[in-house]
Length: 155
Image 1 (spheres, rainbow, N blue to C red):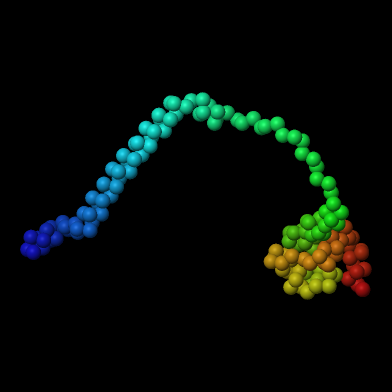
Image 2: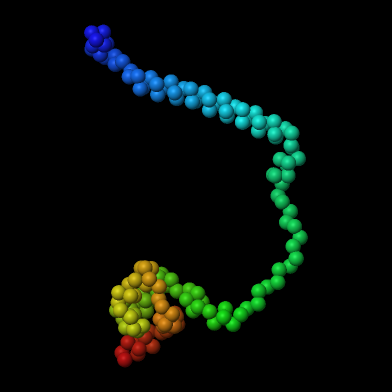
């Protein structure tokens, strides 16, 4: 006990048993991993030597096999009269851009489309999407002039 006390006074702390075990285990594990990696490297080198044609084949770009010409899909009437949302490609940014181009407030745009100001806010934020009944009105924002807009707001 006195010996340990003297060692601590000199500034030397005895390592604990757990620390010694941890260090020894890590050394052993490191050696085992290095041995396994060395064996794997040897195996890879041996395989590369035995199969150079396979290696060249893997590096060369593969030639596409001759395929019969694909027939174009026939358009259905459903595709032509499909969802207007996909055809108009209305995104939150486009709604905001057209509203600002026309110098409309969110409340005015809401009046034009018969929706609340909060709905317009959510459309522009991207938290909700316009329903199909509002899409034609949003599509008209692209081509409407300021005069037509003032007439509609005046009514």
